[in-house]
Length: 489
Image (cartoon, rainbow, N blue to C red; front, side, top):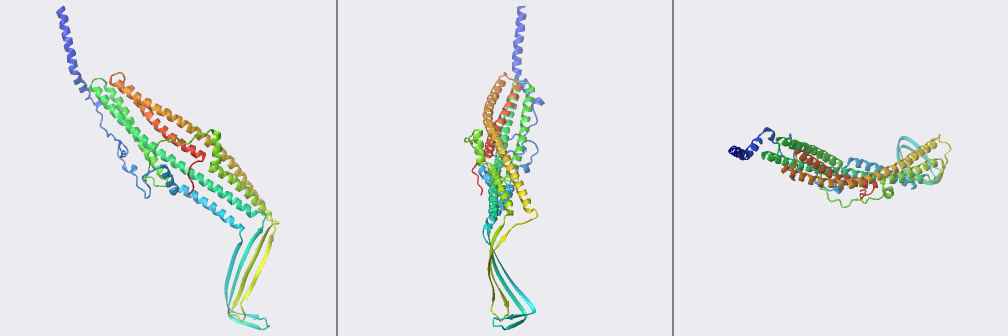
């Protein structure tokens, strides 16, 4: 019995030695299984050269190609982008043209207080007639045949009094001019805000592409590590399928991010008034630098009501409408106009000297008596416009209140969310590294790895979104407050 137990012990020891020797061979044999050798796919490498689009699949070089534009740098700051948009945006060009018409009307109305001077001259040639003239001595002269008559006259009219109607018209045009200029300033701020949104949209899209490409590399590295674990017999073949799923998902996200970046670039270029494929890229995001100061709601509202050009425009529109009502009512008021004229008339040929018509000086009093209700109609229209302007002023104030309150809350939330997103990213990175270390020693499963990597991907996107959400929130806050250093060219 003792020898039998010794014999079994020897056999068991030999089996263990044989198993230890054959273990690497089994792992190598398992690594040859079809599930562990997927069809190779190109792996993009993130460098200073943009990724091909799409990173995986049939290449489409034309859609991602950008064309240089004369006098437009390939890389622009936000201030440069706004300057390009001011010069090239068709929308702002249209608004600027509208303001020119308003300014021209004001310039014209101001001339109404100046005298009206006009001149006229005529030359008439008559054929086959005759005319008899009488001289101072009583003798008569008969002129026959062809006769030329020359006349010239210079007239001057000056308004003396109309009850203030012209002044009301000037004030109406002046307030409209100020309102139009404030509106144009607000349109300039809107253009600045639109360009900033597109500017940071491109940067966010590009950052997402870079982050997704980095995730693809990490997942491909993890996939290689799983293969190595399988070769060493420390992982099952099913673990590779889970790792491959994670890599494929990351590649799909990268392709989607590339398409989003191309669309964002096209929007940015067209907002600047350039072709959609223009080579114009935002410069890399600099440090936050503190950003705008966060005020209380009451402080922010008071500042916005004092600075917002659209609200100031609404106030001046009401003033203009009030002056227009006054102008319409003064249509019933009499007016006094002074006039003076001088001229001469000459008949050729003639035996007498040139005849001077002489000068005249006078005044005209105009008293409206009955105008078939035209003045009443004008007053009603002007009053209606005043009521609309007053309602518009109230609506503008409510818009300012809503904008300021929403922008203020959005900025506070964006800054707080960014801090949480950064903490989330840091935790996800630590957790992913710890899970990988545990997996290598068999203390974690492939499910743990996939979960940690998915959390890391989410945290990276949240961090990118948080960074640019803060920048956009700052732009929205500045736009809502009506602040900024932009001025009309």
